Image (cartoon, rainbow, N blue to C red; front, side):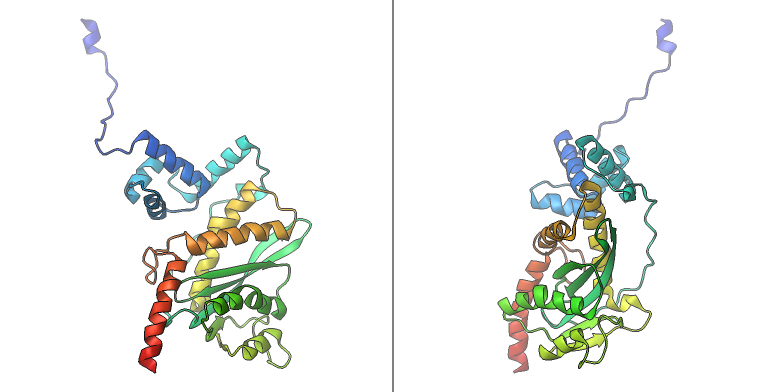
Length: 296
C-alpha cells in the first residue's frame, strides 16, 4: 500500500564486539571518579580489575556520551557534584586548559634509586582564610617515586623541611643513600651554605646539589611533569568535590593521593613502562645491588 513509500528510519548497525552495557557503566563511573585520566590509562586501570577493553573502545564510549575532552569530563563531574550536594569552587567554570608546549624528551642519567632526586616548588593557589599555598615536590628520577608537602610560604626552611619530614626517612628505612638532588636557582634552594638552611641541610647529609639551566624549566622535567599530573589528577578534582577550610585537611587528602600515585597508579614513561613507582623502586634496589658489586 501507500505506507510502503513512506521513508523509514535508518537502523543503526549493532557491532558484535561492542562493549556490554555493564562494562560501559563501569567506565562511566570510573571516569567520574578520575575525569582527567586519558583513554590509555583508563584501559590499563580497568585491566587491573579484570575488565579488558582497548583504549579505542574507551574513546568510543566517550564519544557516545560527549566526553572526549578532559574539560567535558570535568563538567560532567561538576554536574554530578551538584546533584549529590558537593560544595564547589568558582574554578569549575574556568576556560579550557591552556595548551602546554611540547619539548623534546631528554633522558636524565639515573643509575638506581636515590642517585638523583628532583625537587621543585609548585604554586597551588589562594585558599580563603589561609592565604597562598605552595607545594614542595620531590621526585626520584629513577622510578618516579614522589613526595609532596604543602606550605603557606616558600623559604629555605620549607625546602629543607620536606626533605627532613618526607624524603630522608623513606630512604633511611630502605637503607638507600641519597646522592644528588636537582633544583632550580630560586632563593629557597640556592645560597651560601653557612647561612642557607637548605644548602646546609644538604651538606650535612652529604647530598650533592645540582641546579638547572637558568630560564629553562624543562631541565627539571621530572618535577615539571609531576606538577602537571598532580594538578590534573588531584587539585582540579579535589577542589571540585570538597571545600577545604584549612591546610591540614588538604594535606591529608594529598597524602592519600600520593599513596595512590606511588603504589597503585601505573606510569607509561620509558623508565617504568606500565609499572608503578613502588614496583620501579623495588626493582631498582636489585639493580643497585648488582651495580655496587660491579663497581666494587
